[in-house]
Image (cartoon, rainbow, N blue to C red; front, side):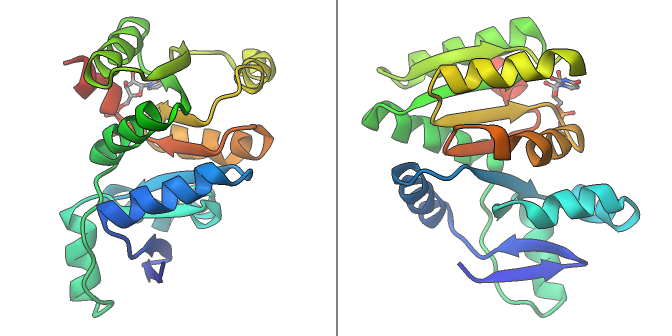
Length: 195
Ligand code: UDP
C-alpha cells in the first residue's frame, strides 16, 4: 500500500478490507509482521519521544486507527485516508483465523480481563483456536521463557494489549524473535471485549 507520513510517523493507506487481505497474504508467508495503530496521541508523543518514533518507523504495517489521523492527513494535504480502527481489525482477524484454522494468542491486560476476552472471542467465532493466553504484567526477567512459550505453541496471530507506548516498545524488541506471522498491538481492546 501507499505510505504517507504524518509529522514523522508513517501511515499506510489501507481500507479495512484491504488490511484483512494483506493479513491473509502475510499469514500465507513465513515472516513475522507487526501491525500498529496510528492515532493522534501516538503521533504527538512520537514528536518528543524518539524511542517511540523509531519503534513506529520500524513497524511493518501502520493502520490509520481513527478519524483524527484521517483528518490530519486531509489537513496536511496528504490525501484521503480511510479509518482502519485496530479494535475492529482484531475481530476481523479472529474471524479469518477461525475460518482458516490459524492459531491466536492473547497477551496483555489484567488476568481476569485477558481470560474473559478469550472466552468472548471463542463464543463469537466458533472454531477459533486460542493457542494460549498471558496477562500483561510479566517481569522483564520472565520474557525469555515467555518468548519460548509462544514459539513452542506455533502461534500465527499474536495480539498484544499492553497499552501505549509499552506495547510498541515490546513489539519492536520481541517480534523479530517470534515465530508468529502477525503481531497486532491492540491497546485497550481486551478490556472492551471483556466488557
Ligand atoms: N496493561 C498491561 N500491562 C502493563 C500496563 C497495561 O497489560 O504493564 C494493560 C492494561 O491492563 C489495559 C491495557 O494494557 O488492559 C491498556 O489499555 P489502554 O486503554 O490504557 O491503552 P491504549 O488503548 O490507550 O493504548
